[in-house]
Image: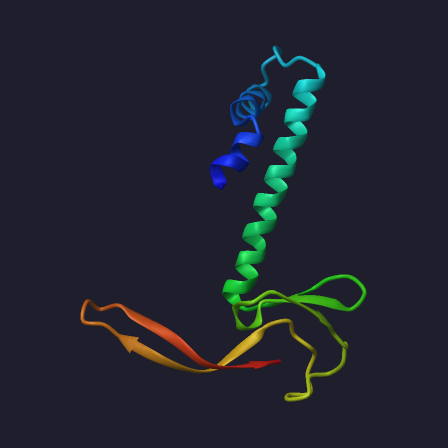
Length: 125
């Protein structure tokens, strides 16, 4: 399936145009093909950045505010769109924060000297 998707985009032409653009080569022509390849390169780079930023949100289980009191959350290692109400924190009474704070964890020590902290409980504060 991936090979079929990659076959739709002429990757070699996109790479050639990008290399010429970054090298500052004056051989970059202003034809319609070059413009299409640059637009495809920009779209692919945007999707690449979007994919890895969403992956970081789910990996770190953080919450990031969006527009109109919505937030995107990675709680439970799943992406969810939430409607947030900006109020004081119900647990500590402080300013609302956009992350799941670890409160309990287990430190595991290994025989090679390494240690790893495994979070067992988080609170939404």
